[in-house]
Image (tube, rainbow, N blue to C red; front, side, top):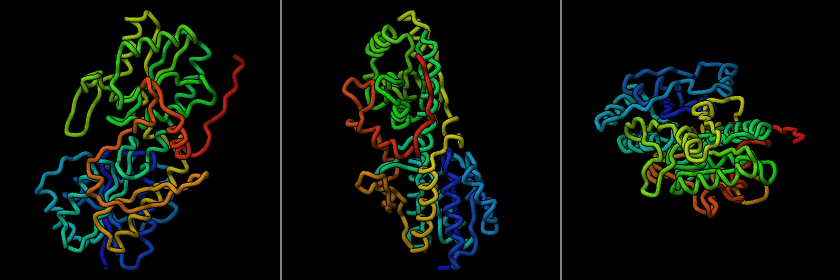
Length: 385
């Protein structure tokens, strides 16, 4: 079916979202039925504005730069679409002879992708989703591109901070990880450990109710023993009533601007325990870091882009590319196509068997699951302490 491809980015970028773009563009170039390879410059709003750029004529040398480019090379957005916008999009697709729509994003973007698919109906326009998220909260798929690199960043950063705290053991350092309602990224900090007893000493996840008294008890016990303590907490921590430990500063739909959880807990340690404490909040540093980009993550992101194009060309529509692990000692994954209805706004949180009984750490099972995704061992250090 001769026509044009349109690639759209939605939501927050990752360290490998451009790798999926590279995979999609290079794959689309192989098919004679593809005329133009449009990129929506600025996310879903760019569709309505018809702000498209043809990437078909961009040379391989320049395209390869996508593999090492942070953020989104074609722009993205969190634009709130209305019901009428989806109908308008279909008309725009027809006007521009767009037969293949590839939407790259997380939970919210897959919801948008599903609504575009439904709006297209039997128009002959094929719609395929490409997963992307540092939070790893997209359902059904084993994991999503973007998570492995962010996991590597948080593990490496915690590992380096741990060396600092160990060498000057006089305070508690509370590090805050992104992840909203899912603790996958916070949990990945456990990969900083090389030996038993290494930092992070405590990990608190949004899947378990946060108890301030237990937290203070855990911190005091470790501080008395070690002098320096490293704690990693999720930005989405909630109390027993399901309320955020620190109320969000601002919220529009699913976009939440959290209060400073790490600062709040550091102040709590100082005031209640009389112990020096400080907080660190890497924030978007983790999702923007190419220095800590996981090779596995990058390769899988490229594969996701390629697979999405193949699916669309083969007239498979209303699906998202997912990953399924192949059983065995060596890590291997294959791509699968998941019906988009199974993904739309279904949030995948950390399962119970990945969290320890006290709720202040993760299990070895999680570490074994996560380790291959970060793409090789972290940097080694030496210490005479």
